[in-house]
Structures are given as C-alpha cells and as structure tokens.
Image (cartoon, rainbow, N blue to C red; front, side, top):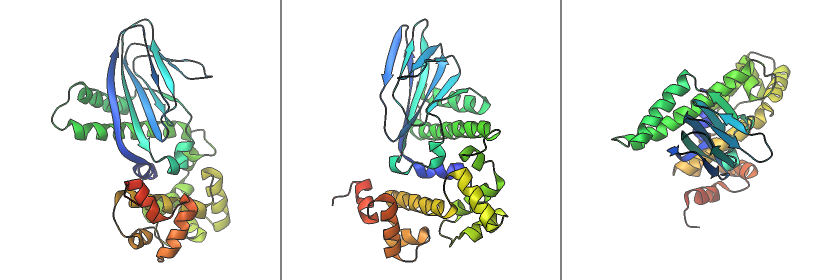
Length: 279
C-alpha cells in the first residue's frame, strides 16, 4: 500500500475545481481563506506577486507553481505585463487532516518539472476548451497534479529531514509498519506485530515510530482506523457492524465507543450529518 496515495484518497472529499484566468496589467485579485481546503496557483505566462499578511511578497514568474496546503487567504497582483494563471482548490475533510499534511509549510513554491509540466499542460488544454469527456478528465488531472506536488515536496525534503513525515516516509522501518497498517487496518495489530513487520525489536521500533510520526504506533493505528471508518460512513450505506469489521472491531458497541472518542460524535449521527440525512 502506497501511504501517500492512501492518505490523499481518504482525506480528499467533494469535487476539486480549477480555472484558467487571463488578466491585463495592472491587475489584482484576492483569494479568501477556505477552511478545509488546499489550493494552488500556476503562472502560465507573465509575472506576478503573491501577497499574504505579515509575510514578504513572493515573486512569481512563468512556470512557477505555488501550493497552499491550507488554502490560506492571499492576493495575486501584476503590474507590468499581462498574465495567465491556473488556479485550483481541493476540498479536504477538515476534522481528519492527516498529520502528514500538517507537516507542510503554509506556502510551497515549485519550478515546473517534467511531471508537473505534463499534468499542467493537459489541465490547461482541457480548461481552455471544454470537450467530450472534460468533466471526467479535469478532476482526474487535478488529483494527478496534487500527487505530483506532494511527491515533489516529500522527495525533496527527505534528503535532509531527521524527524517528521518527510523522514518517516524515507525510513524503511517506519514505512514498513505504515504500509502494514494501511494495507490491513482490520488486522489485530500490536506493537510487537508491527515491529516484526518492520524488522526491529519492540522498544526501539516504538521509539523510532513515535519520534518520526509524532504518535505512538497504536495511537496512529486507532486514528487511522477511525479515519477510514469516517470515510466509509460518508461514502457508503454499509451497516455500522460492517464498517466496524472493516477497521478491526468485532463489536459494534466497541467500535461506536472508539469512534465517539476520536470524533466526538456517534457513528450513526456522523453519517447523518455528513450525508445531510434528516434527523
């Protein structure tokens, strides 16, 4: 199981959106903060500045990509030449943001690399002229771009990172345990079993896992199980007993208690609220 792909699949919700915008100088546009979202800006042509409160202006040029994991409020402004940008946003479940994403800085700037260039080029083509299949292609291309952005950042950071998720995803011991948990969250995992998967003895494994991820192994396991359960409740009509079994609980009562501890709400009520069902 690819942990990054799994995290994106569980955290993302709703339908991503994007727009291609041409602007004549001088111009300025404000983007309001959007709780529970992540966004990006791509400069296809021209130059502009990204402004945020209490931070130095970020100069952007043709080919620059800016990723804002928390969709913070910002302003784009251009003074000297006409500019073409792509902007987009992803909806993220705000209460279950994976700690992997919390490690990201507020703004990440990328030069366009081969993978990013290909995804951006295809997205640009679809946004310029809607054609047969565009409604299916655009969300898929936005998801592809998100994966490339996150992959690029974590790959770049993993070289020097000693703690945090960039280091965890580059550590074979921790990665082996994470893959086991993500591959089969219903398995009756213990610290000893995860340590065996990782090829390390119990105590050194537990310390290493907690140091890099910020959570003890069993705390992460429970958090991930409840995150997977929340997604199943939002996106399916499977009985609570079935959802409980999928995340390792034989008792629906024990599952409901664990879910309420994590989410502060009973699983049945969570499903009704998430799907808009009448109470």
